[in-house]
Image 1 (tube, one colour):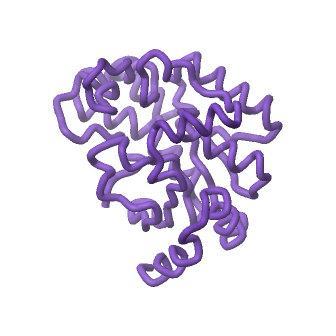
Image 2 (cartoon, rainbow, N blue to C red):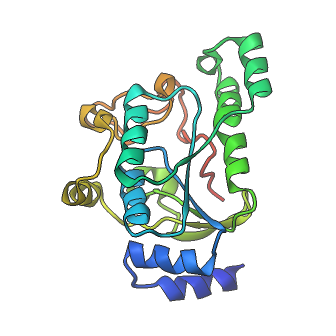
Image 3 (cartoon, rainbow, N blue to C red):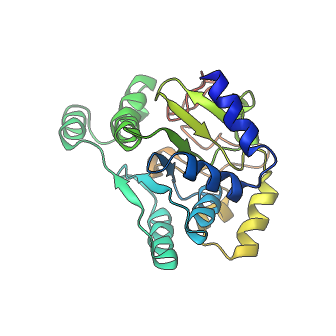
Length: 234
């Protein structure tokens, strides 16, 4: 796999994100997908895919606990590009069992409970979304988290057994904002209210000045690695 990654990396080396995505879409026809949570970065990549008619399936994880602003961006994106965004929902039986036994807010009670909720609402649906695919495109940027500084833009995802590509990995937040402004891309207005990272509504708050980028995610937990497991480091 290392040899294959090196070969792919050589092919897309020096290409802009759209050209790199176009090459990968041709190299993995019907086997390449992009996951969006409708944040700044994901809206940029969605625009790149839809505006250039790239044959890459776009999907999202509908956890059932998203912000109203997120649903607005989702709907507006469909209206603007007239292209589908596939939604993956939690398995009803597993979700009902958890809520029946622990209530709707068990994730506040312990890290274990929070990870259980993330597992049901996000990780299991993600596995279904990725099944049968060979390449997963994401909106990850290097500066978003200390846990991501050791990552590279093209990597092997051992957990999901496929290649991951982060087309705007090296972009700064200013570059992301400039691209959104230039192309008049709809974005989540929570970003203007101090939300750099937007997930489920009960688990996300605005970040105060001077706080870490991801301080607003699972803020009640006292731990250095606050990831839900979607992009587990190898």
